[in-house]
Length: 258
Length: 310
Ligand SMILES: Nc1ncnc2c1ncn2[C@@H]1O[C@H](COP(=O)(O)OP(=O)(O)OP(=O)(O)O)[C@@H](O)[C@H]1O
Ligand SMILES: [Mg+2]
Image 1 (cartoon, rainbow over the protein chains, first blue to last red):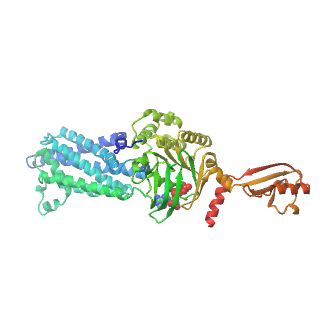
Image 2 (cartoon, chains in turn blue, brown; image 1 turned 90 degrees about the vertical axis):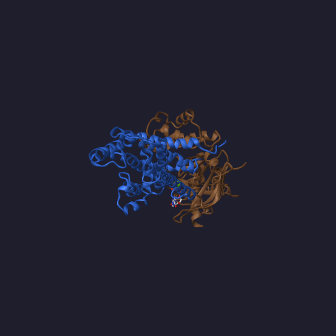
């Protein structure tokens, strides 16, 4: 019996399993974010936005679209990936993955790939919903897609780590709720950092989310809080950091094997 | 012949400090049914989990079909199927989907015909579209077996396969295990039902407190450690043992109607012929006699107890 060096059937099995899980809860997976986004537009775009100035020549309603997508992309990637791996740990079905001829890298590909796919699709759904409310332009669609995919991957990896680290559901929800959402709100999702007085403008630059949102917004309107190269470096850096952490987890068997 | 599983110097100390396995050496021959017996907490599941890659050993090596389970885990694991002791299932999945998933996970290309055959062999075909949470406990256990067989393993671990399974189903399962063995699959099972090991196993290993205390052919084990009991149905009931028979360790049973004599079947002098001679000399008649070989269960209990004494 020859065993191939790459278990593509195994990766595909995990990926399909995770996608099927989302399909079973299609209602929550799609309808909830669409409704939430619509509410944001009614409130920020319509009610408040009509009294706001343009931001750097972009109408406020359109200005918040990239930030809104990012907010959902962050939270959904974290949520999908962390539950994807936490759940089998919790129910015990992880035994099968651990006893299968799949490498750590293949396990990550399956789980993180599925989580990232779901959040990218979600990002596109939000984008389409937003287009119903505000006229939009996307100056650099390829960059937009690249940021969308890279950031979804990075946060899905981060979520995978949280899912392995977490011992219960509370811990799994802790990081998205208490760290990522606040950082996103404070990270220029709904305003430009130029609008902040000093010293807050400088403080904000320590918030990594600023760089991600800025790069993504640049791909829409050609303007960001920081140069796009810096945003790209931050995105790739975060991705690399998560990969290193995962490699360490698997090498040590941390919280996966006894 | 090279063993299909070779375990050398295997020890496991869990993070809490508990020594679950101590220096276990074990070879499993290709194509045999090996039964691992031992009381609760003896280390059976730990041993199986290490071979299957779920638990990391503290020291020692294991190879499956010649492949090291650490360095050559892909080759080793793709040959192994595992039915764990606990019923871990994805409640929302259908039977068909979960078995197909397992096959893919183990690196096999899709083969609906094989999945169909496995489900039919396990009488699960009618339930293929049912969600796992809609199944009974015995059905769930069969789903676990189907998952383990989905990738056509050469080595199958069954950790208490018949726990919570009714008598009829247990017989079906034994038949399935025999069919698998006949098709060349090596089977290692744990069980608390001694009659299961007695019925099926070629060889038996007894593990107690993390140590493998005995490994032997089932028949040899029974012969070696087996004690026989001779029962004589007396023609006339006896109120007490006569002094003339005091050289033999006899017990009176059934209101004095039966005389029982336990002896070592392998001893040079069993004492049976002389006993019978003395009885005829004394004019003690009997209507019938029979002997009974002690079961694996008796052997097992005495082994574990002598292990504790040591
Ligand atoms: N994950 C774990 N962490 C710490 N100790 C463990 C762990 N798993 C098992 N043990 C301990 O190791 C010992 C052996 O357990 P194991 O499950 O291997 O026994 P077993 O022979 O399968 O028992 P049973 O017949 O009850 O299934 C027990 O004392 C158990 O408490
Ligand atoms: Mg056990």
